Image (cartoon, rainbow, N blue to C red; front, side, top):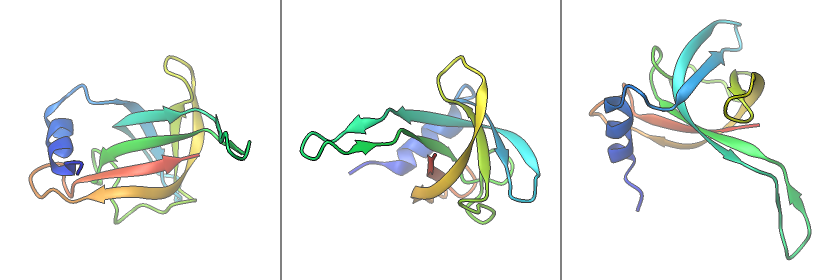
Length: 118
C-alpha cells in the first residue's frame, strides 16, 4: 500500500518540491504554489482501439497558503496554469476531480491532494 503520509513528509521537507503553478479560484483570486505534475500522454487501448485523452495529475499540499485546501477547492470551476511540457509556456487547465486525499496530521497543513487536471 502506498504511504501518503511519507510522501507528504517528503514534500513538506523539500524546499525544491515540484514546479511553480498558478492556482486560480472560481472567484478570480490567484496565488503561486508548488506542486508535482505527472503528465500522462494520450493512450490507445489495444483491445478496443479507443484513444484516451492526455491529462495531468497534480500533487499539492492541502493548505490555503502553500497549496490548495480541500475546503476551498471547487472542481470544474477552479483552474491551474501549468506548462503542458516542461520548459514551455503555461496554459490554463481545469481541475476536473480529486483523485486522492491524504490527511497526515504531521505537516503540510491538512495533508496532500492529488488532482486530475484536463
